Image (cartoon, rainbow, N blue to C red; front, side, top):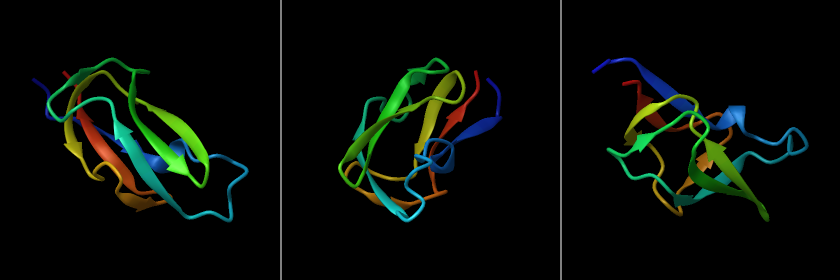
Amino acid sequence: MSDETVAIDSEQIWPDDSDDIDEAVVANWFVRQGGRVSKGDTVCEIQIEKVSIDVPAPASGELVEQSVSENGEFRRGDVLGRIRRV
C-alpha cells in the first residue's frame, strides 16, 4: 500500500461566481473513513449558501481522513479530507 495521499481541496471545486463567499458546510459524506473510492466518485456534498455541490474524488484509493465532519463549516481552500493511493 502506498503512503502517498491526495488532498480533497475545496479550492478545486469552489464555484467561480462565488468570490465574495468564504465559508461553506459539508452536508454529507458519502464515503466513510476507510472506504475505497475511484477517481471521480462523489465523496461528499458541500453546501455554499443555497447551492449543493458534489465533490469528486481527485484520485482512486482509500479515504484515510475526513478533516471536516458532516454539518461542519470550512473556509475556501481548506482540505476536506485525504485519499491514500492504493
